[in-house]
Image (cartoon, rainbow, N blue to C red; front, top):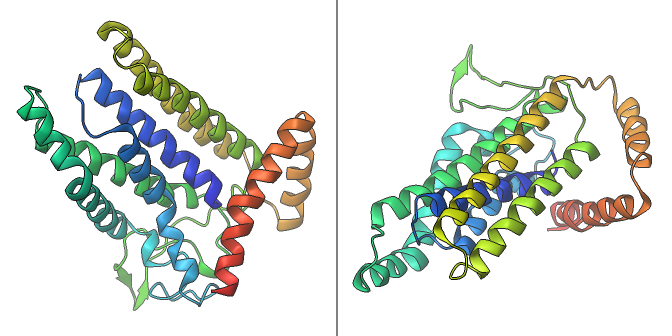
Length: 266
């Protein structure tokens, strides 16, 4: 998938984590920190696009290499969570505790780490159904080798490099869950405890539903060739209203084309 879809997935993960925090009646980490951890970790594995050897199948320097593994996801999630916890979360929790709050530092860090890890792993899972291309899948269990070669998984060829239906579904999921979480954050003092928990449960249902729909949709697809997929995507986009088409193409240009420009020029 492309950066926009990954960012939307990370946003849904972060919104779901905030919902869990609301349901458990905790006050840390903040919504902004969870959102940053989710979005950042969901797109960060594609940093290997900037290593300078995009088309290489060497997992150390090429795209879809070691950064697309569970080991990297674990390491990345821990570092991001630890960094954000140290600079933003720990002091906030200590202040809450000093003021008579019930939050504890361990649960705050664990929620932040779980958010970062889930967002990181979502990137790996999302890339599995795509064509094998020059990389022949991704090294999910890096540095595992077999017969002297790094073991790669995925490359199922169910979807192309992008899919407008997936992009729009994930965008709507991120928008809906983000809207509810934003309301919970802005009006947190005015919304009663029971209603907060109901809204938190609604966020979880929408987030999980978005991922279930995406998985089911992918299972029904088949990418026969690049040309076939481009034609199919053009037909998909034409099935949406004009305002949706302009928004999708504009957003893709901002997120994806900018990413490609950076990769090619820096």
